Each structure stands twice: as C-alpha cells, then as structure tokens.
Length: 295
Ligand code: GDP
Image (cartoon, rainbow, N blue to C red):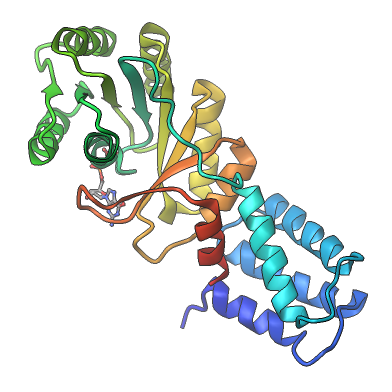
C-alpha cells in the first residue's frame, strides 16, 4: 500500500526513539529519511533540502531542551519551520478598493470556475460584499453556463456577453456594469487551456493590462504535484500574481504542493478548495497545513 508522508515521518522518528539527546549522527539519519519523505510527497528537491538543513541546524543548536524527547523536539521544529516556509500567517485579500477587481487564472480543470463561485459566496456571506462575476472564457460556451448556474446557486449576478469574442471588452463591460449596479467586488473568470499555451498567456496578460486587477489569483490542482509547481512558476513569471488557490485538497492530498509552490514563486497561498460544493473553501492557514503535512 502507498505509504503517506506522516507514516514515513513516523518511521523516520523511530530512528530517534529512546535516545536521550540529538547527536550529529542520529539527526543526520533522520533528516535523510525526512527529506526522502518530503520528496515523495512532491516537495521539490531544493525546498526539501533547505527545510531539512534548517531543521537539522536548529535541532543541533544550543536551544535543545532536555525535558522533551528528540522526536517531540523535531516535530515542533519541523512544524515551526514548515509554517514559516508557507508564509507564517494567513494572507488576506486586499478588499479595500471599490470595486475590488479580482482576476482568476489557471489551466482548464484546475477548478477556476468552481473557485470563482466559492469566492463570491465567501465574500458575500463572510465579508458582507456585493460581488459580480464576469464570464470571460470566450472559447467554451459551456463555461458561461457553468458560471451562471453557480451564480444562481449562491445568489450572485453574472455578467456574460456570449456574442463577443473579445475578452478585454467583456472584462471592461463587466466592470462598468458592477459600477452601475453598486457591486463592490468584480471576479473575472478567465479562459484556461489544457496545458500552458502562448496565446492563452498573451490573452490574460492583455486582460490584466486592461483592467488593472487588485488581486490575481492563480488556481491550481494540488493533486498535480510537481506539475503544479512548474505551472505556478510560468504563470507567476507572466502575470506576477498576488496569491495562489490550491484546489482538491479533499482528495488523496499532496500537501507538499503547498510548500513547494510557496517556496518557488514566493507568493502566499490564500485559499484551499476542499470539495465540489460552494461552501468547500477555506482560508489558508500555514500552521494548519504544516500539521497536516506532518500528520
Ligand atoms: P476550470 O476548468 O478551471 O474552470 O475547472 P472547474 O471549476 O470546472 O473544475 C473542474 C472539476 O474539478 C469540476 O468537476 C469541479 O467540480 C472539480 N473541483 C473544483 N474544485 C474542487 C475541489 O476543491 N475539490 C474537488 N474534489 N473537486 C473540485
């Protein structure tokens, strides 16, 4: 059976069990095991190495407490270190501008449209906002319908212009409508592709330049592991996004993606998707994710 990260860490800690102090030798062995476990959980090599090197240095440092076991000490150090690597604290959306313009980007199937609905629902019910959704995917007529269905479910209006083939114009029209109707948040759901594509990148860059969003959220499927990290890097190089949304963390999760993405693109993870329902959205808490990765 597939062994998960926490099982592997448990096994790694056994190396230290019963030993009164942390020595160069036993900590080095344990770190090797932990690094292997992190790599298996799709944490990229550089991140895993930096992480284990830091924990190792701290474990061997002068602050070692004799009152707790080496295993407990390492667990705490790893928790603190993972939390810090994932940003330390929760990163909030900038909702001060009115209307706040939020651009949603990512590949097809990542969960963009679902997240757009969830975010609108969250902003309405938790933050007292009045959002408008904009259907800016001109390639898939079904995408417009999908957003309209979600909008109806959560009681949020959707701006669409099925006649238009101009995503910049549609985005601008949506914002104009929001201003007219007193919507204080505009969430623009953009077109994706199955894989990274130059035309898609140019298009979303143009939409960004035209509407000057306050937030650009990059949506990525947490189950895609190392691909998620590579995609995040390309989107960030082109769009300089303001935050990441990790979806599908309800499945057989690879918590490692959270750690790698944060350390590779150095942008905060702002939300996590935990299911298909409109309520299945959580604000990202680095400390909770650290505990989850460690099991
Ligand atoms: P888009 O192409 O990026 O707009 O992706 P969609 O929003 O259409 O989502 C693709 C599929 O993933 C749909 O079947 C969604 O129901 C599903 N999905 C989206 N977010 C989540 C999530 O957090 N958990 C699970 N289990 N499924 C999700």
